[in-house]
Amino acid sequence: MDTHRLVYLDHQATTPVDPTVLEAMLPYFGQHFGNAASKGHDFGWAAEKAVDQARESLAAGIGARAREIVFTSGATEADNLAVLGAARMYQTKGQHLISCATEHKAVLDPMQALQAQGYEVTFLGVDAQGRIDLDELRAAIRPDTVLVSIMHGNNEVGNLHPIAEIGAICREHGALFHTDATQTLGKEEIDVDAMNIDLLSASAHKLYGPKGIGMLYVRRRNPRVRLEAIMFGGGHERGLRSGTLNVPGIVGFAKALELCLADRAGQQQRIGALRDRLQKSILERLDFVEFNGDPEHRLACNLNLSFAFIEGESLIMGIPGIAVSSGSACTSASLEPSYVLRAMGVGDELAHSSIRFGIGRFNSEEEIDYVADAVVAAVKRLREMSPLYEMALEGIDLSSVQWQGH
Ligand SMILES: *Cc1c(COP(=O)(O)O)cnc(C)c1O
Image (tube, rainbow, N blue to C red; front, side, top):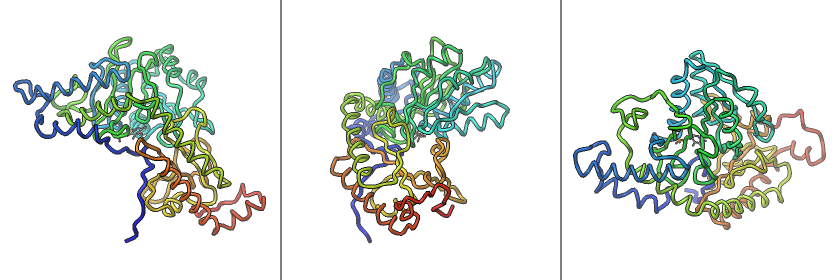
């Protein structure tokens, strides 16, 4: 078997569990295995106490109160609860929602499910750098708009939306504001009061915590937000999310956020420097590489590039052992270009040639240099086989030429 060095650069997909997080979780699989809803014995109380502490800590991390945190199985469930729960609860006030074309599917799909049930949804477009127009948002809000859902950091191109400004606009116009902060919790500053956030989704496995645990922040005052549950059972989480609590996951989630916040600025700075190093090293040595996203307001850990004249999938095959992600999604029938890049007006050709690099806490400078060298070598090798690349070098206008077989 071919052996190659493994380098993980796909931290927008998931992150490894930090060893300190794992250590904090372990007692809750063994010794303290109790059900946090068991009110009559020590096993239950120990679990409940751990959950209470974790809830306090997670709430404090976003400037919220413990009673405003609802634990879910992840951000997908939190997004569904926010969107479906608010739409159904406030349907007599109105049946109009606003979101954005570049949201995660965990927001887009419930929005589309609501459309199928007769709700109206306005999907804001974005410019070439993935930015929404705040005037367009203002103009889209109507008296019957019940919810605006705009993510904080984009998982593909790393854009940071101005959520404090969006929150202020929503508050002024009387619409609730939900933000999917899965990519930013623990990385960017978040304060639900200062930013007028009414609902916020997050997930532990994007911040060095375990998979299968997430949360929804639900504002309880100024204004008090009410949601209709989407899960029914034992009435856990104030009736908003029935189901036995994932105690080790919750403990790990809180520990993961504590670790992030203990050195947030330092990590952002270090990871941002690695990202800049990778970007510079690749762009210095290759031509016809397009940067995707907002060069100014973006996640420190993310880099999305399109390598013209080659397919992202071929590039990924050409750098074995290096874990990155391409701008195409395999659907059952074909390779679809990323809908996020498409919404930004990136052509199908360039979208198919895009790669997302996601840098994390455990990556080293040496790994970054290794990846940059491997990418540059693979792109050069693949382009040697491309007559169109030769034509481009000669300055022939290729704007109307397709270089791939889609
Ligand atoms: C990963 C991700 C999700 C889904 O989170 P899960 O916990 O895996 O369900 C939702 N939104 C964004 C922005 C993400 O990056």
